[in-house]
Image (cartoon, rainbow, N blue to C red; front, side):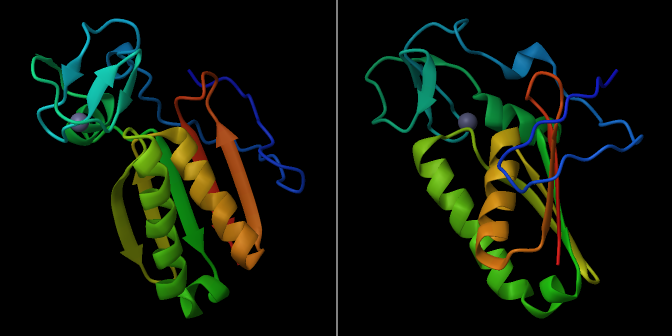
Length: 169
Ligand SMILES: [Zn+2]
């Protein structure tokens, strides 16, 4: 059950109140922090779990094998971030904005292996994006607003494992 807990990510970002419940994937199995033997290596993407977090490191000589939370979410098609972009401005700047989306993902993923785009679904006049981490969806929304203004809504689930982000211009 989703409990209303609206976070204002930045001054100028309006909180949203909607009745539509967020679909939650807050299964603890996606949070491996503190439970894994170290070092652990994700056989899917090569991320290494060490010192309590997943990082991009050279492959350890000896490592336990563990699917990282991002690959786990991708495998289960269980997104943590939902982002929707739409509007006339979006339609006429689609390519530029989607390039920015990819750029933010590259930047975030380089530092944080668990922040990845899962899927980009193109529609007429809109695009829907899912991410493996709630904060990546917010970062992308904030980057678009910073570059192109428009209206941004960011809504988090109660434990920040889920975000729904909406941008329109
Ligand atoms: Zn992985």
